[in-house]
Image (cartoon, rainbow, N blue to C red; front, side, top):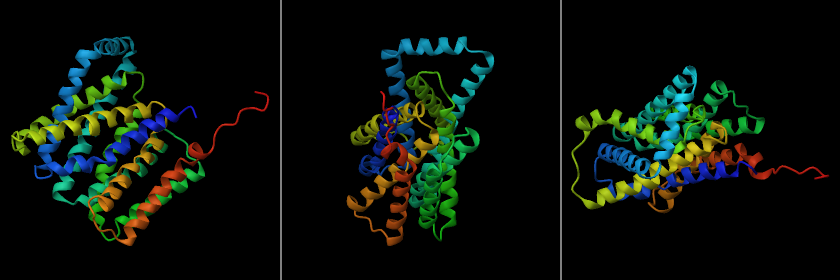
Length: 300
């Protein structure tokens, strides 16, 4: 399967994100905004250091590619990368805002809604084709999300806002081709940190003095932000954004499993059924790639 490495990249990214709660739990006493700001600022500093220490040649090549583009392609590349930063920042900030002011349930539901929105955006904007089984998987995901949101329209509304911002990021970056992935991600996070800087002075509580806080922020920055986002963008270079979006369901499914088996949170029968439907939807959506291998011609 020639696309296996792209599937592995996406699955690895979303598996890592699924374990986010394990790194977040030890520093949950700190403000959510402080965690967000230090996470993004740490990512920006680390990525700038990596670029200037190890990837200066790639940086020069990227600028050279941009200079040699036609004016139309150059404008398109610039706006796609600015849009990517805006969508990513909007996703991070809305996630934290909803977590603090609305409910944690709404943030969990957001990344179950996101694959549906990504698939629909990819269908209408990128004209990505879906077969009947994939449409069935989308319908199954919708059913699972409706079961989880049953009786709480407010949670669903805010989940749509969070999910839509990340769906837009995935679709926009599927269109963003031809530039070095790590340089592109560095630009996104650097610009995102500049967008968030004014909010730091309004919502931030200063710099915590606990070493443990910075140790976990470093873990979150490297293994739960930079690495997954890089793998996410790499996956988008080889497989459709609708596929990458559907694989995103692995993140909340793993989070749900951790909540059940590690943090011993209680779950209703309806929640278990809903997550089971959504997990089945991931299998159905990617069934052709998982179970069907290309057959070689008989005379090969």
